[in-house]
Amino acid sequence: ISILFFAKEGSDCSLTSVKQNLCEPVTVSFKEGLGQKFRQPSGTGIDFSLFQDDELCKGDGDVFPLAVKADASPTDDDNGVAGKHIPAIINSQITQAVFEKQEKDKYQVRVVKQILWVNSTRYELQEIYGIGNSVDNDFDGSDQGKECVICLSEPRDTTVLPCRHM
Picture 1 (cartoon, rainbow, N blue to C red):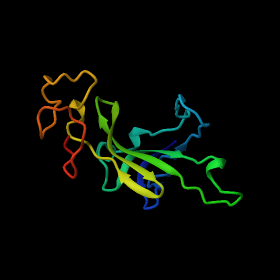
Picture 2 (tube, rainbow, N blue to C red):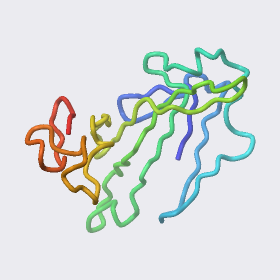
Picture 3 (tube, rainbow, N blue to C red):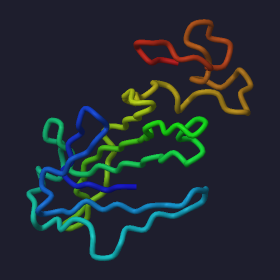
């Protein structure tokens, strides 16, 4: 997991901090397995007093005040066939965010964009309109807003592209 402040995404799944002299990137490695917790090392992070509110609260084009990148590193078993070494392809998930000022000196993070890099291909995650009202296990046909917008009787189970409605 890497945390970068004022980060810009490159064309090859890389993130570059444009204000690295003010905010050092933080990278924490994890062993293989589930249920692990991320704790940012003490003394790392961002000093909000060094920046104007407008720098923190909006992305400047392709530079975001906060970016979190999770890399899935292949194991040795995944990297090679019959003794031949194949260059590792690292799959990644990038979350780009801005800060929202809540009170005098309190900020909250708001996610703006999520990106997946799978086998060197970039996918930008998009909102699916109506997913919050989609199928639950307790669909009984009388729940308003959970039915298909085409037949108006069956539960929602399909997304229509490119509009992304359910």
